[in-house]
Image 1 (cartoon, rainbow, N blue to C red):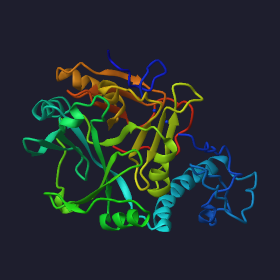
Image 2: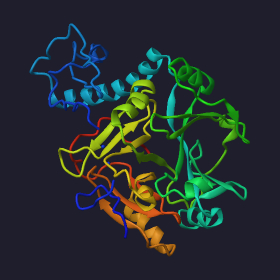
Image 3: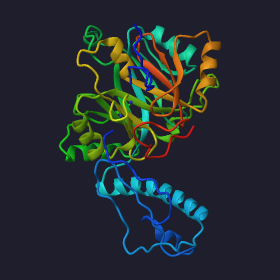
Image 4: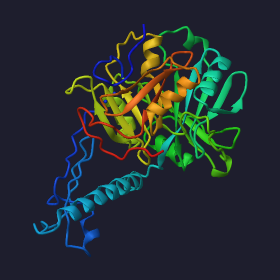
Length: 377
């Protein structure tokens, strides 16, 4: 039986967030945190910004209503600029205020496989990725020139024999101050592992989230990268990774309250439900996705659908045509999901779902608007 994984209303598989809804400014008579920046054009613009996870609404003081004669087209442009500046500066200010070093995106995901050579052929021949490091037990593919990769590891016996274990072994995030981030976690009562050095000189450490998922943080020197994506790659951009979550509140205390992740989108199979809960890293566009309401007895095949990662593309239909030209037809979609994005689902030889998703929505999403910028190619 094939488990459905898309976020369409007709499927039974995979999307998420229960935070306050952001307000969309329809005119320029609301409060804008950057009103003073436009004083040379006109005195004191206003706009509202609502932060997720019940953080206090921030309103600037002493701002007056714009005259009704102010051109609405110019107002709309100023408001768009206002929100863009606010998003960038909020992320920067948040890191500085908390003392937490920046977390800029997903560096790589680690996937368990039962046969390294068989999986290597899937990621290489079907998805077009290039092996940059290979041994009998591990294979590493570089996805993006600046960072991002996929590490395949031979599955441990205890994981292979337990149908209820995740084969998404680890998500590793990029930071520019790995030692300081480890100290930050220690200060807040966590027990991260020691800092280690990879064969390419990258420094990293690991920590467990509240549900026991292995999370890594790594810093790579730019001089250690030097990779140019292959023209055969189906995508050169990893945009998110998702995993089963049982306790949304506990996980959010870790990812949101401690690490500073922020709402991107949330939704469900029904408009009033929450089955998918997406949080962007605090200092970049990549996100993690909580896969909610998954049965406790979910087997290996269903967990392979839920515990997944995703590539971003401009045109998923072009990606589908390319997959077919390579003789690979065992994928679902493309199909527009409940999040308004067009995507398709492929599966590696061990049933781990590899999603290929367009970077921007083609339809209005259900349930909740997007609250942050979409990733770029």
